[in-house]
Length: 56
Image 1 (cartoon, rainbow, N blue to C red):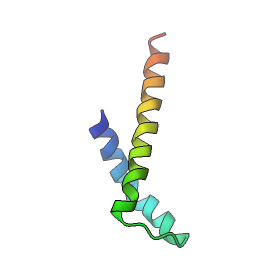
Image 2 (image 1 turned 90 degrees about the vertical axis):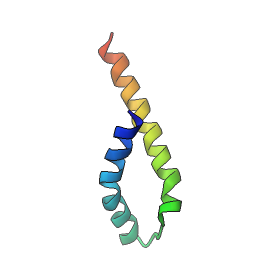
Image 3 (image 1 turned 180 degrees about the vertical axis):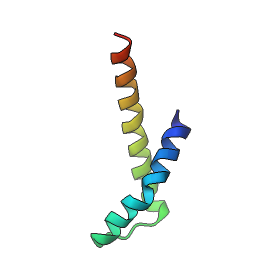
Image 4 (image 1 turned 90 degrees about the horizontal axis):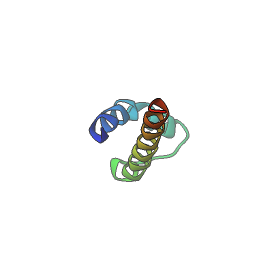
């Protein structure tokens, strides 16, 4: 599942990077890595929440 989440995150990464660039926040891929990990944690938690609610 993490690989699918990473693919989704990478698909939207250019939009996120453009948003930050437009705000004058310059980040390289090394800087973005912790944010991608945070996003994956959020996606995993949301997935588990949805899975648990579906099984109730």
